[in-house]
Length: 206
Image 1 (cartoon, rainbow, N blue to C red):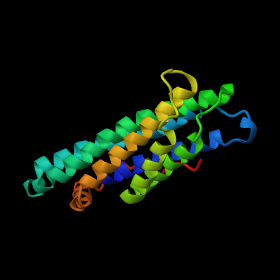
Image 2: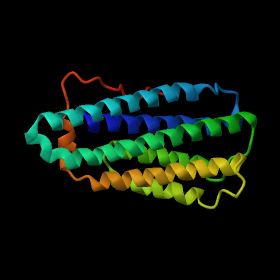
Image 3: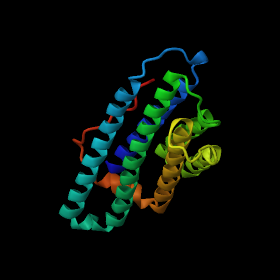
């Protein structure tokens, strides 16, 4: 259950960034509904709620079933990933809101931002599919695009560059955490899955 909840949360993050990529790529930056980030926030927060529920269930199963206590290290590894996903969710929402406001007001965006956001979306989607190698490559590309795109000023374009760079580094850390959990982690997460667990629906088509 925990592994499944994490995968859905990652896919939802990828969907939010794909939507943001489309906002940036609008021909002539035509008017759009800037409130889209509120709906995306609801989707992402629902995913985090399912992750929290899955974490609690996994802990209960380990406590109640002594034969499954050997799975504790794997579950703890997944919990560390869950914590990092929570951090990354806040960062992605901040980036989405700040960038959307900049597009709406006609501000210039950092060079390479469009491509970097595409890399982040690709990396999160790959990680949701357990392709850590592809996720790592995408995160590294995103970092490379944003390094040096900010200045000491904490406003406007430099701020967006810093936010996107932070997201890329958070993703790299999440990939490292995922790599630290070996194969039995997935099995451990599935063993703790109750048949009546609530599911986070797949991200809506945007």
